[in-house]
Length: 62
Image (cartoon, rainbow, N blue to C red):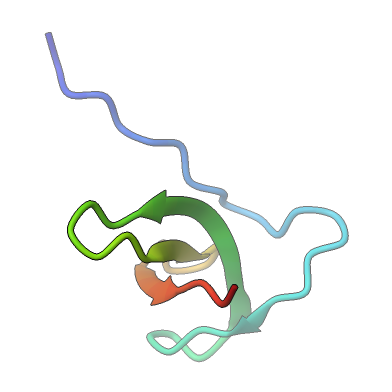
């Protein structure tokens, strides 16, 4: 069975407030999914660029 590929957005959702992407420099970087780090219990948010499809994890403020 092939590995499951997560769905990533290819265009900005309605009402999104994008930041400038640190990779391609376009205003298309949006917050996407949350996860909790098992070791430190810190909440991390995955940010996705809708243009270049690159991602970055950032610590989510409380």
